[in-house]
Image (cartoon, rainbow, N blue to C red; front, side):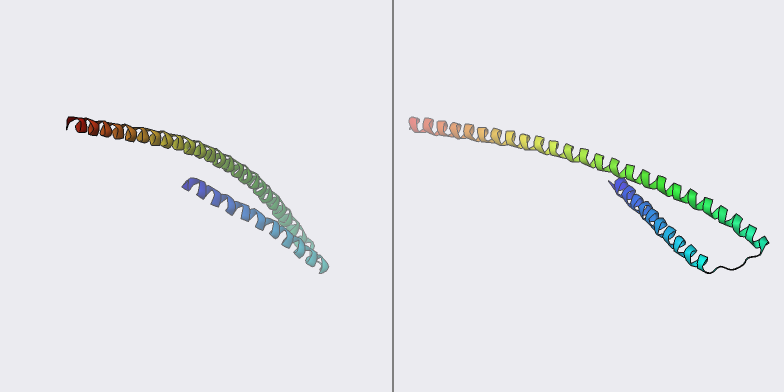
Length: 133
């Protein structure tokens, strides 16, 4: 049970990271729109460096986004698996409860029968004693 809880918490944390990555993407898009509005001339040497860094960052962002997407798919799969296991456990608990109820009913009938037998034995004993007097 502790493992399931820790797994769920881990999955929630990963899912939160994925959601934050989406908001970060929106922020980056908003910043690029602002930066495009403020166009300045950049020297050619710096321009090549900036292009290379931009390409590197874009590839890293794509890799990160892909890994987050894969993580989200994995999280969804694990959540589905946990739900299925929980459903199976609930079904098993219901069956065990039904078996326990049936056993308790049988025990109650047996106790009732024993009580009736003891009552009859006592009555018979008393009648024999009455007849002897």
